[in-house]
Image 1 (cartoon, protein in one colour):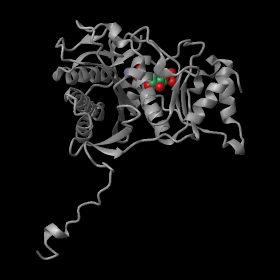
Image 2 (cartoon, protein in one colour):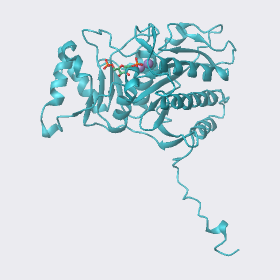
Image 3 (cartoon, protein in one colour):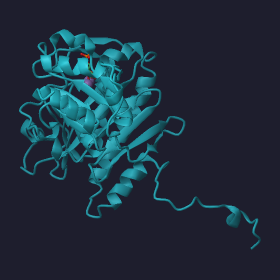
Length: 351
Ligand code: AHG
Ligand code: MN
Ligand code: MN
């Protein structure tokens, strides 16, 4: 066969172990291949979450046109005004997760109680999610997100109860988020061994493609992210840390830059990729913190630790906390190991 035959002249890419460019479905399926005992149910569940992300992103991109901006006039269990897009995202996730009968029940920021999706004893998972994070930014076209976590349903038999959700974040099987930013990105992790991987959505083909393989957070960063508007309500320890991080000191590469979007998914994603620290500490207004443990803090803590970062309340590891209530709030500090360590030293009064 001559050398210029199409077969010979087509050079297959050099064999590397990079999987850049594969679709989310392929990545999930390959993950299943890695666990021959996997029944395919976990794979199917993750793919349903990927489908929900595609459906929500198409709604987010048209929100301004599809008359789903603005308030519904209701308030949710958090006492917050419910945006139409919050509800649309919530319904989309429920419909997608309910379709394949692997998800026994869900807990959502938008609903006071858990919702049973399947009484089939083969439904082995429960899912927690914040369907639309950063609601206050919807109307001003600033990045918003979706946050999710997958837990194994305790084999207590019978119908799932709220107690089945009250398990520490270290028991998560998978966690991830979708960032509806300049592009839509889905970041997912099945834990430290599996690593953290980012998939960018190509709306022209309707697929997520692996674009950020094996995300690792830098040991320390150059930005801090906190709502300075809460300064008057902060504790003295937080005030001292905040003053320290803004001081000029070449030796310790200070001051840090300040970045704050007001959407946890956006602020956390930037911190994950670039390093640094995000903090929403307890303060005199919110003594238990503002962010919710089950579907905001735990999924991000799981992801940050899987990427080599740290996640604490400022005093204790987020993933060790045993939840007492579905919508329990918690102070949240996420970031590079060095930067979270320094924050904790201030909280202990060691600095
Ligand atoms: P949600 O829109 O799901 O209620 O979450 C909003 C959260 C989180 O996205 C963000 O980090 C935080 O609220 C911002 O709070 P402040 O506006 O008080 O800074
Ligand atoms: Mn949120
Ligand atoms: Mn929300």
